[in-house]
Image (cartoon, rainbow, N blue to C red; front, top):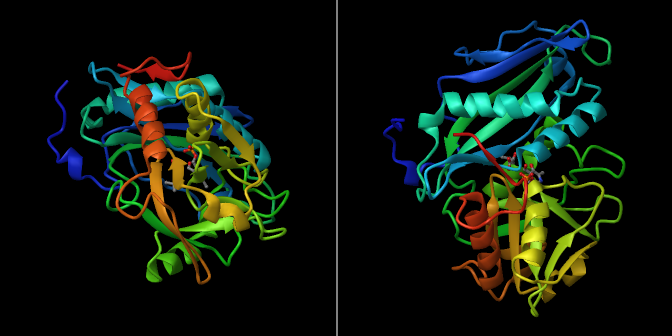
Length: 341
Ligand code: PLP
Ligand code: COI
């Protein structure tokens, strides 16, 4: 396989159109056979459900080149399962797990020359999504849907790579109790756009959302879950029904316990206790683990002892171990790696 000739190490997190993507349509109560297409443009009726009432959900996962030259994908079964949960909540027809995995395999294989080389720091981002495609004018679910999956090579989500981030405690809320915070619905991201643009204008990299019922507990950011490290080396991560169950966070918890022998606490984390932690990071497929140097809570500035120059030492250990598992450098727990080529 001949790889494309691009500057992999300097890629940002953006969209680069690749040759082939997967499409399947749902009509009359069933999914069609689906397959790859060169057509990157979606054409639909002006009154399509997604255009009127935002009936859409998505996933995000990555393919990597391993140290020994294979192309692999990290825990895609969990993305398939989470997308089913999102679909059920949004009254959309779930795309079966086996078909989801097949779409990942087919699309990554067909675009294998776009998978960044081992050691470049880049990876192939995979974006499955689904939307209501037939006309809907009364507020109700569509009856026709399209599932698509495209790939695009990406570098770090945050500019500056592993430089510690400055984030603020948000004044706006992301998810209500018994709302949609726990699924990957497009609407959760649409409503965060005003706030992320404002955060950037005020000099912050991201917003940390707190629980909207009491505004006293840390939840997550607009696009990642949060981890903290205590001064005595424990991993603490917020537990809440209104945050997205991050696959990266769940993997980090297992890596911390089983690979690094760390103690882990998954529990509500109060806003008032965050100045007690030694390290902080944002975790997700796009974010991987991005260190947080400073949290600003309306005039209260918390600068973690790990500082503004480097990733904290425990965060770094977690990051290195997770990456080594993803890149096939160390043995992964059963079922974590799906080999594609
Ligand atoms: N939280 C939000 C709101 C996200 O958009 C994401 C990204 O997918 C995550 C957390 C991290 O989830 P994962 O690790 O499964 O990518
Ligand atoms: C991901 O990490 O895959 C996401 O979907 C987050 C998004 C902010 C890019």
